[in-house]
Length: 429
Ligand code: AMP
Image (cartoon, rainbow, N blue to C red; front, side):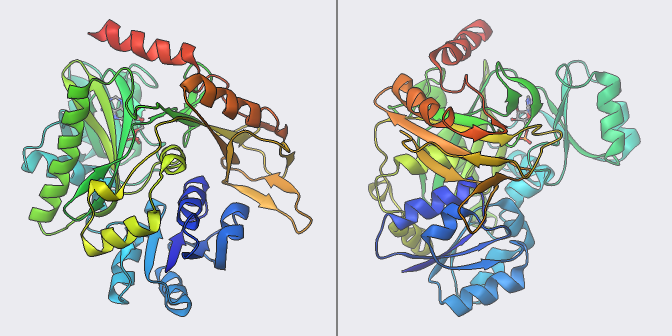
């Protein structure tokens, strides 16, 4: 079977690596920059903009692929799934209309509201700077200001954290008043990802991501500095009841999308806040998280190519999906100065005997094999183990062996950080 992988980051390297575990699967890939990891796994590669729908479809036809797996959100928004479908190629990834769950924050909230779905925070949608400013000025309590469209995960301003009330008003005005305002939720965040075939949803292990740039969850938000998961696929600050309720919210979204004529096919990513009032949806993404993809795909013990086929047919069930009962810790290395003033072009060398899986992201490899940083996250290692401690030590052994102008967060996956999460949740209750 031939599968097209669209995208060139760490997430797509993890997708390609999981597909490549089936020796009968041939990978063809489209990416804007040559990812050395995906390159090695691919039979053919096309370097072009991932949002160039015409080019992606032309390549998919030439290569004769049976399915496509869309990694990032931008090609979904550009309509690549719709265009591939017109060419007779099914995708892991929703149509442009269904991808609005991620690409249009107003659509997401209004859809949840209209269908009376559980887990929707209090929110208001605005298209006028004056009205948004009046609302922020008169609201009692903290709000979160979100631009309506895609921002690469960096466009959310939280009152009481990054901005005060005047700052929130100024930010809403700078967006022309096209914002979703939401109540600020307090709690612990977790990620629940699932395979969805239009109707059936099969969950993956829970993961916790770390968006802040520096240790102790300080500094600016990033694309994600790393993530961990536990051997039982749960998180110690998420009860069974909260998990079941989150899963039910995800299924209710899939049901609502089908009912309203935009069936959802692909990966559904739910980012939840575990609050004292139960799980609330921070956002949905229409694809795997990056880094969370690396945790769950490293654990996947069933054949991803078969899952792809099943999603295409609409015959997916939990009997097709299994994950190893191990802990994972993913640590991203990022260039010096990331995220505010990242420095590109610094040479790096990798350890000879890493105890962790390597996923390349935004890194350049010259013909001699030397690696150099680019401006985004460089590469990630995923350590695995019977316990979180063992997984963390394996990840740490690998990342600490990388030489060059890169850094990472030492605290991700440590017992101390986990204890802080558990204590925070207890404190709120
Ligand atoms: P997003 O771009 O929606 O992923 O949001 C980025 C970050 O903002 C999330 O990871 C959360 O930490 C935070 N966030 C988003 N919405 C809320 C909310 N309603 N309350 C509190 N924090 C939020």
